[in-house]
Length: 158
Image (cartoon, rainbow, N blue to C red; front, side, top):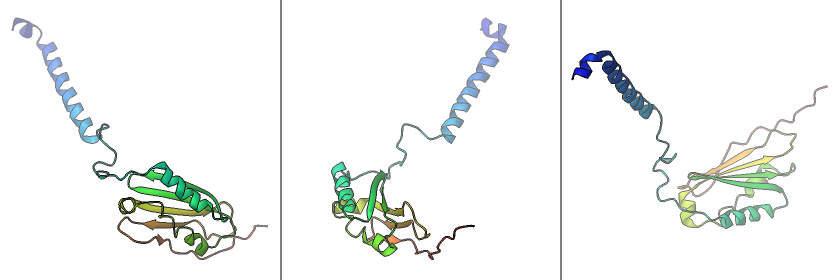
């Protein structure tokens, strides 16, 4: 007790520092997420796994079409993004037909769990008709496509 009476200022500063540290910790805890938990929270509980071979089979099946230049696949949470690059001569209707059998390599449980998003783009085009985007919700039975754009041919400036 004598030490506390003798060092009142030091004790007050130590208590004040301790309170500020606890308050600062609580503020940081309140405003910043816990880094140890999953990004998606519990939305991915019961996740259905997909093997790399399934993706490779799908990519190979799409690439067999001579109108396709390249295919990339990316899984993000409950969504599978498929990007298909086609040659410049492909019409929008032909591009939409490329995804008719895209879900064949997947099981029913995988189709029922994941949302599929398809981007069809051209490397070079004179028209503004691409890219087009198709989306299939896990509860839906078919793809929904972006509204077709009015085709405008770009004029060269002189």
